[in-house]
Image (cartoon, rainbow, N blue to C red; front, top):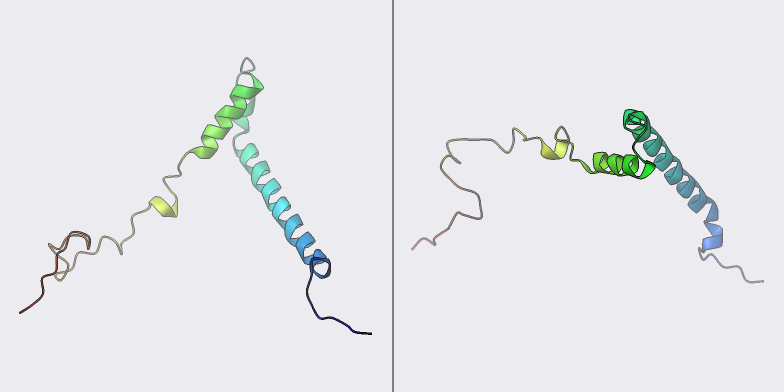
Length: 99
């Protein structure tokens, strides 16, 4: 009898199952939280169709969050020291070789 130590899909099925279930659970928690936060859009106006309410939620989801870390200006980017004063961005600065 020869035994093989090769890894295959059948030997890792439990790991894939756990990772898949955790991902699905995280997605469900996110969607549930999003719908709970914006439930007023779902119930405000009975004359709106389900399609219009859904599209309204999609627009809300697609909006940029200005308070997000991505859009905040960092103090590091706004440093103005005597060395960097008057110097433009690296794409504008031209370096000339010394003789």
